[in-house]
Image 1 (cartoon, helix red, strand yellow):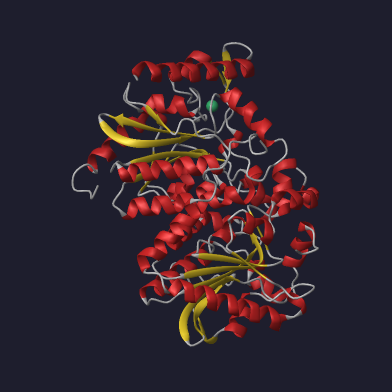
Image 2 (cartoon, rainbow over the protein chains, first blue to last red):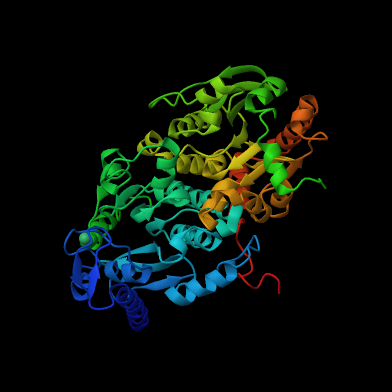
Length: 284
Length: 274
Ligand SMILES: [Zn+2]
C-alpha cells in the first residue's frame, strides 16, 4: 500500500512540475497573486505556498493527501467511479476524457481512507484542475458514499472543498447533488459523526451551498475565496466594485462563518488535534 | 404532449400573470396566518410563509414571492431571497415539525440573490442548512414548482417527499441565460441553452427528478387560474393522503432514498448510447 501511494504521489507531483514547467518555461515560477518569481524548488519546499507573499496556490488532490496523511495509510475509495453524461450533452464525454488524461483523475474529487498521527478518518479532496472542480453526479456520489462509509465504520469525515460550483453539462442532475450530499452529511451528523469541512481556494456555488458549509468544524486556508455567488456575478448585479478581501477566508472568519484559518503547513497538526479531541466521549 | 418548445416554456413559466405563491395560498387554503422574520437579522419578503388550513387541517406553507407590481417586485427583490429568507424558511419548517404539520412549498425564483450583503450573511450556508433540514424532517413535505425554479435558490425549498411541477414550469441548475454565459460566455445564446438543459417538467419527470406533472389549462396557467387551482388542489390532496400513511421514520427514509438515487448508477459518459 505504501508503494502504491508513493507511486500515485509521484505521478501527481510529476504532473504538477510539468504544468509549472509549461507556465514558467524554466525553473522560475511566477506567483498568480503577487507576480513575484520564485524558483520551482522553493515552491516545492513550501508546498506550493508563494515564498514571497504566502499565497496558497491550489494543489492537486493526491498531492494534498500526501501532505496530510501518515505515509502508507492511503487507501482510495470508489477509485473506479466514472463520470456520467445524464443530459447527453454534446462534446462533454470528449471534454471529460481530455481532462482525465491531463490530470490523471476520473473526476474532481478523490476520496480515501487514511490516518493522521494514527487517527483514522475518511477523507475527500476536490481538485480544481478538473473542470474547476465543479460538482456533477460523480462528485456528488463520491462525497455521499464517503459520508455513508464514515457512518458505517464510525469514522470522522474530513472534506477539503474547492469548487467553481455546479457542473453545468450535467444540468439538473448536478443541482440535485447538493440535496444528496447535504442529506448524507445531515444523516451522518445526526448519528454522532464528526465532519470537519476544510475550504480551499476557490470554493463557490453549489458546493458552498451544500456539504462544504455543513461542517461541525469549519476551517479554511489563508486567502481562499469562499462564497455562493462568484465576485464577477455580484459586481454585475450590484453595479459596483467589491472591496479588497471580499469573500476571502479572513473575511468569512470576521463574519462568523469559520472556526479558524489554517495555513497549509499546519493541517496535519490541527486535524490531528481535532481528531484526538473527538476520540473519546463522542458518540461515534 | 405539449406543443411548446423548452424556450417557449421558459417564457410561460416567467409570465407575470401566472399565479404565484400568494395566489395559491389565497385560493387553496383558509385561515392563513403569515409568519415573518428570521429572528436573527431581518424580514425577507421574497419568501412568503405561514400557517394555514388545507381542507381543514393545519399545514405550514413556504414559497418564493416575486410580487405582482413593480413596488411589490422591489419589496420582494423579484423573488430572489437572501440568507434571511432561507433562515425564515428553516424556522417555519422546524416549527411545522414540532407541531406535526405537513409542509407545502411553492417554488418560483430566478435564483438566490447574488448580492454583497447576501454573501456577507452567508447565502451559501443558509441554503445548505435548508437542504440538510428538509432532508431530515419527520413530517410530510410536498414541493410544487409553479414557475421557474433556478439553481440552489429553488432547490432550498425542494427537498421534499414529493416534488410536483406545473406542466409548463421549468426547473434547472441555473437560468438559461446564466447557463449560456458560463458555458459559452454568451448569455444571448439562452435559447440554445433551453434546448439542451432538459429543464421542462416532462424531461424532469422522465429523469426521475420530479414525481408528478400537473396539467395546465390550454395556453398556460395564467389563462385560467381557477382550473390551475383545482388541479393543484387535487394533486396536493392526493399526495398528502398517501404521505399520511407513512410513519415519521419512513418519511425521512423515503425522501433520503429518492434524492440518494439521483445521479447514481448512470452509465459512464460516452457509453450511454451504446
Ligand atoms: Zn506571491
